[in-house]
Image (cartoon, rainbow, N blue to C red):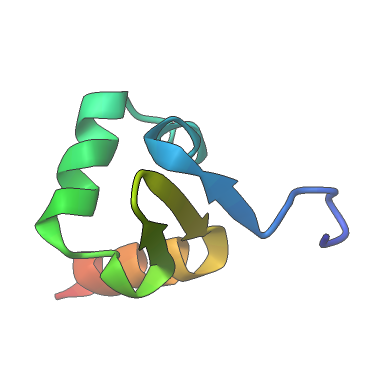
Length: 64
């Protein structure tokens, strides 16, 4: 864990939506777009998302 007490990972579309402060539908669209593939580990229905990588990848996409 980092200093703020947040975990480095979130789980599932719900966790991603919570982290990005958006709806589940929007989180699913972002995941499906492939923009954050490097930050996602998915085995079957289990989705693990690296929060820091998501932030970096989305910031990079916004600049382009």
